[in-house]
Length: 133
Image 1 (cartoon, rainbow, N blue to C red):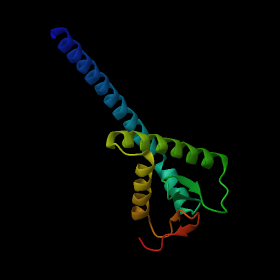
Image 2: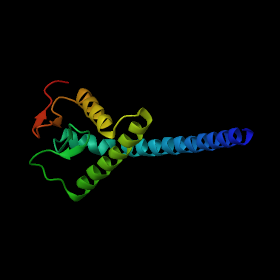
Image 3: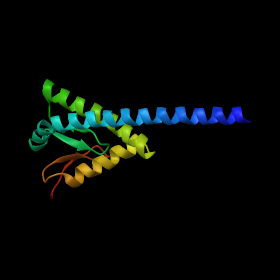
Image 4: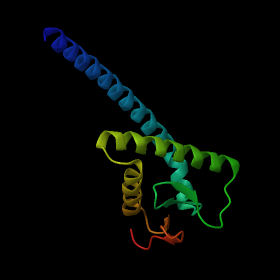
């Protein structure tokens, strides 16, 4: 009986350590991603102001219909979207939900915080400009 308790307690201690390490790694990854978002924000904001990119219903950044982005702008958007997908997964794991739900909440937040004239792609694929701040 005593041996079983020892094994159980040992297992729980190891599990707690692993979960703690994973939590630290997850926090470090989130901080790294947030720094990248902050660094790209001025360029992305400029593309939004120019009507070249907009937010989609699923929390991604995309070229507005009819707009062709240059190589650097395309890379910027691709990098942003890859990092968004990663942070959505991290947040979903923390909250016990799906990355898709986190992305949808982010899309809604972008819409609410968007400025008049910003472009948003709806679920039906149509692009609409925000009419009010």
